[in-house]
Amino acid sequence: MSDLITIKGSRDGLRLRLDANAAWPELLSRLDHHLGERRGFFHGASLVIDLGEREVSPAQLDEMLALIRQHGVQATAIDSSERATRAAARAVGLAARPLPRYPEPMPTVEAEALMVMRTLRSGQVLRHTGHITLIGDVNPGAEVIAGGSVVVWGRLRGLVHAGALGDQSAIICALELTPTQLRIADLIARAPDRDKVSRPEFARVVAGEIVVDGWESFKR
Image 1 (cartoon, one colour):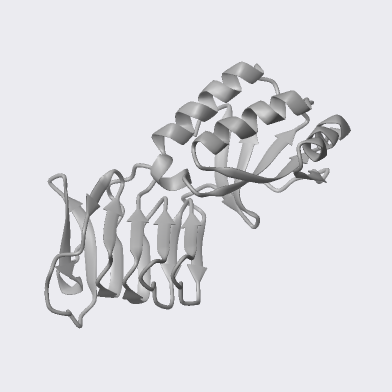
Image 2 (spheres, rainbow, N blue to C red):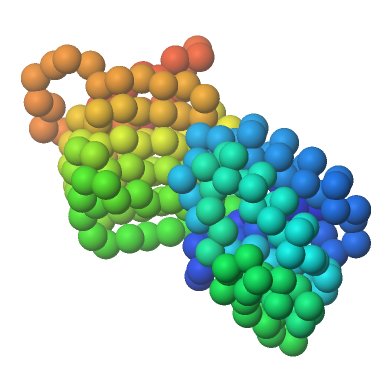
């Protein structure tokens, strides 16, 4: 996202890492800007916040938590190598965890794709910074939100948002594409009124609009 702020996928879900040396007001300003620019992806998300070796007070944590809540984001835990920071996290009601001595590097979006084998039911949200492949159905009321493309090996009848970090080249594919709403980057299209189509289809952006075609017309 920037040289000061990184938000990527991890085994914990979404993980926010803040630069350990930058001024706190500048970090909060950058964070506000990035969350606002990508609201379609982050709204409703949960984050683990990695503060590294930075010492942060309870008042500073309260300030950051209030900021991310304004964007519809919740923090679930604070990771830090500083005891004072972990104590501050507990003081504001968050789980606090020490960082490993040799932390794993955060994966890049290009290297990280997610495959899930289950059906998403109403009220469930599947969110990932990279590509998502779902083997199963997306029922009405469920949501899939991806920074990259979305492939559903099943019936897609809920809401799907591909390229949610701004990538208009992302595509959406499904064996049965009858969503309540399609989104690619900042573009939105509702499912057209039509008879049920029993063939694989995909959606992409063409000339500034989301269009749906049969899979046989797909060309790389």
